Image (cartoon, rainbow, N blue to C red; front, side):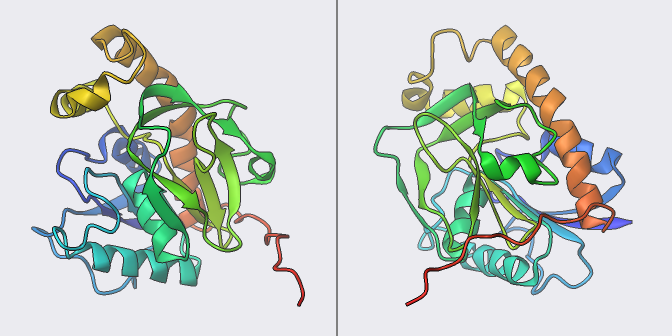
Length: 249
């Protein structure tokens, strides 16, 4: 059994359909919701790590001191080249844990169903190669990744913010958007953050629109989740070593 640790930083953002897709692919899920549920001290016994999203900032340690432990686990996973996926806040936590930087987006929040476009490195990536050129995603964030970690490869971008998906150490991934939501989850976020919800296009958060958007997301990201389980199980070869190198002095 392929055992995955899933860190859920916020009660409002459960694993949802993503958890179902991972389980369908044969993964055993160990979901931890800090601080109520203690995080493991290390990653022995796990074949992969996933960190979900949340309403806090990736460096909001004063209000959420356990975020330090999340970043430590993500840094450990990256250092060990353990198959890892950070989603929205999880991607920001991964970025800052491995030398990247985040900030509040200068062009305002991204909210609602949207599209991202694959970059060159994605076409040979084991998880992204089979995806469409412009996959459907769900956005709901204020902060953005302003600088990727050193030697990370950019996999997807959007017109507003460049760093939508990245990979490092061959099998460690971050995506700035959501793939785990349901229409009910997104509507709850919109009710809790009405000022953000107003920024999306008219009608995009209506029930029928969200149902259609999530059907499109499932078509693309369910196979992605299945490939992640195969990667964690050792059945799928990680990406080739990055060709990016620091310039010689």
